[in-house]
Image (cartoon, rainbow, N blue to C red):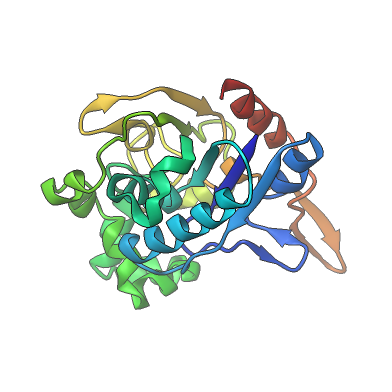
Length: 256
């Protein structure tokens, strides 16, 4: 199978040995699949990111035979939906399936509050400060934009493409980090810490083909921030310690 992995906001393809989809590309390639990870502007708008993703998918497909499945995390799912709906770079003719993973189809309440400029939020979670500075991505992740009529017109399903949604439910499983985020921003239950299960599995009030994974937003792509190991006097996350997510990706591939 030919697969393109699409990262979310503040994401990346790879940083040295670290991969955004933690171990997923190497694992699936080891299973005999042809996999590549797209890289788009980590803080760009959906329009900007969708164009880059579509171009990557089309170039990838033109050097292979057979259709491509896109596995897209978080904002990457919005990028892929926009690219397909607009048929950017003639991407429709190459894609047979889109699997969105923790994608805020109805927006995220966390994005709402960051855009409103809550200083306490930025002090508590400084990693979110980049979103506040660079408004393009943040604005497109708000519930207001995600549910707007004109947004919906640009996100219509494409005939011939299978859409599968994966939602994360961190209850009893998620890391302390995402538990703190969900509590601070009062994210409705159930959620993965930043995206509700409803938002990740619903489009325009219609439930789609949905799978629930018992992990938080980072766990959806294989990052476990509670799995710590000693490094000198400190204890830091060991992202490779828990590889249970790889079986979930195998199951996704088996569905297609």
